[in-house]
Image (cartoon, rainbow, N blue to C red; front, side, top):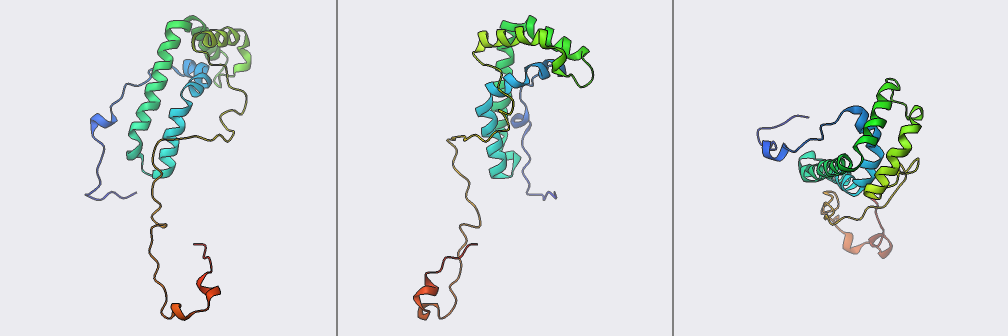
Length: 170
């Protein structure tokens, strides 16, 4: 993508947000729960990205996703730190792929603790890939092609009614 001199870059204040500084095994162990806890924020962000096609317009939604993940992980740290660390440690030593089926003994207590602390159950297989409807408060962006004004050809007024009433799919 080519940027002209009129391109407005986001400021450092817009881009600065507290990050979730956790290791990969901890993120891997809690990913499904974070995904379910922050589902609405994540869908709002992805909807913004797909509708606007401009990542600069979705910085606020991205900050909301990060803040939700951070709040959820802080809640887990306060309530289930021991169980999450046990699962993360097991995943770390299970191999480079961090295959979860080798860590079922530590996974069950972690899931139970997370459910008791947050009320969130582990989502079923395929939960994140199934189609779900998301209701948003954001306005739908205007399609530039739908606001286009088409010229009527000369002599259109004298054309037969069946031609005047034709629907054209553009």
